Image (cartoon, rainbow, N blue to C red; front, side):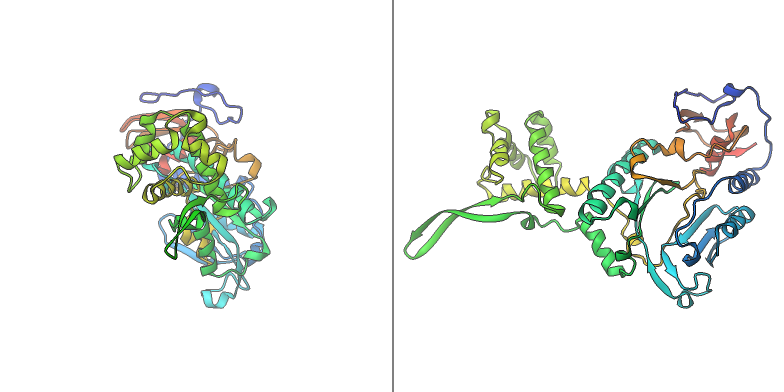
Length: 427
């Protein structure tokens, strides 16, 4: 087992074991493409594929290795679909988000569109700083954002019940939410795009989050002059106003306990805030006795009297709004707005990871680990591979290291993942 380091991690979910656990297994010597096909066929023969919602109204599509995408397929029942999967061993399988009168018709015009689910796709690529993260770190962070999407937006702002939302790990780098409530079925592309715009808040206008109130009005030679204060949204406000208020209060609370240098550096990193403005914002909010700081006054009054300069106040509020938007995460707008989109089939294998698309309940998400829970436990034995690149990764509760041009034995599920990642060949 030259070139392989295994870090054992005890995990109650794990039952795919290394050769150390079971003793020397038989070694499989077959070409990589045949190995992958054999694994996929075994999976589709033995694994249980969840029932597809309104299956006979869905168009299906698949990518067979070495061929182009095949669309315009329809199936009347799950046995027919499973026969196709077992016979064809597709690398990727999809079904339409739309419902059709004739889903298997050869052209879109002949299908007769009946409506579509409202789909949200969060991918690790959308996470700020993803390029600096490991695969495991990206998956952990995108799950945090996905839970926020479900709880704060779909259930909170839009009022959908949990039973109206299908929740899935995509098998790759993110999560899908399928909203199937009757109220969304007939929405057109523009209306769906408006929903995405609400969630991602593309506009940066802070005026919609404040109300202006005059005080200290004076009269001079027939002209009125007033000073103004800016009132923050109500703490119980719905939608983005409420999110903005909570984001601001969280920042003020944390700022009272943070180091001055750290706060200044964070402010300067925001576009438009220079060192002088950052120093002013810090002074207005956090300098002085804790009970009498500008931050404490804002929290007591729910207004922004701490700022005498409109420019500095607006820079700070823009900073808070950007933080609020970042906390909301991102969702793939083309997926949501497309009323004839294909989405991954729940239960199918992902052709680039070997993980299966897993259906989840909201309460399962917190403890869900895709690097353990979507590795099919039906794969048995070990497979000999030869590394084609140096590669370190986590899977089934262990850390693995592959060395280029070195051979080793891996559990078959791990070997499949590495082969699909094109980091090895089956030797």
